[in-house]
Image 1 (cartoon, rainbow, N blue to C red):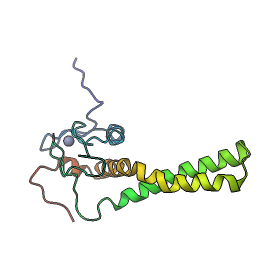
Image 2: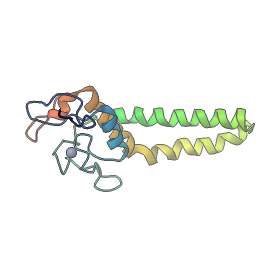
Image 3: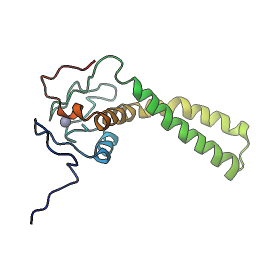
Length: 146
Ligand SMILES: [Zn+2]
């Protein structure tokens, strides 16, 4: 009887024998700012500069103009959820007046998206890999899809 490690591969191998990590694994790799396909390459060269390709598996991170616009929605969604939760907790659980919550929450709304923009982009890339597995099959010579 043979056992296989299903934590890395949830789909059958492709023509290129590219591993297809599970969605949860790709999300975990995104939170660590690692390549969603191999988990080895770093997404960022520096705080603001993204690598053009994975240094390990050569998955293209630079996916064309406007690709990462969806990351803005990821960022907005996370920020909105946290601000709403903080407001509800502060107002109704801690009984802090709304006027005292406004300043700190406004500052949070301005600063927090700047701090998580890298993770929002990584999550967006992992979501794309999850929803369009063809991205995982790309080779170094694959053209960008329009
Ligand atoms: Zn990689």
